[in-house]
Image (cartoon, rainbow, N blue to C red; front, top):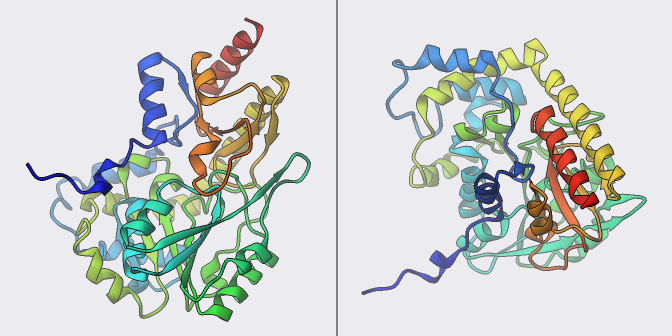
Length: 371
């Protein structure tokens, strides 16, 4: 029999693995980043209202109502928006559209696990620039190190802000430096902003505002509206570029689920006008504070995020396997490292879960520490 291509030997992702093990062993799942709450009622009501009305293929670019709603929400022309099956497809589509054999893309490490494989599937190479982790100053990013990694083969910068897993939000000065670097070397910028409404402090500045001519913004309704399983994502492209992206989009998944697109289109203005995002941030901030305090009480060094719904922690005696034995599933730090060594004892914790789940996790960890 013929054999599968070597790329089909890809392993189960650590996120799927930890969720599977958590379910099998009855562990509290603070690993994979899906919320513990149901989506908001206004989103669910919108979904119920569109069933039976939007049940056939949507246009590959997305339902016009959703493209217009996203354009209004993001401050761009709806014609420059492409709706995708989640942000993961958006990133894959952009890798195919921007890169080819011999090209390089720069990204920071720790790095979300799909970035490097997607670049490789496009025939290109992902080049990672390591962030540093200091017990007092937290996660640090060096623009000089990023600039030093640029070569004649570099085609794009792939950035994530708010940043998973570190929780970093780039400052305006850092963003200005990134834009200057991209313009100096004529690079595309792919800005993964799926956590754009999940920040603690000043609102992050979108890169598309600073460099509209070269920035692709990737977003997700799943993170904004607590519905990660809906798989409605998007790309906001530089003006005039979307037709080229759409040519490829027709041969990836063709179109995202039409009824869910219609529901998100109806829900986006409600979320903005009702103050839903502010309430979401307040709830996450409280849970983050509780989890961070509990982990510190157990001897961990905790790095509180400026965005996302993850925090990172260091503890000399903790590994993902030992914590699973205690009844708590987390993501090991090494899952976010491919080119460099992960800091010893690094773990990532999701606090998008319920108060009860967080309290149960801390209770189990305290009991395990006493045993």
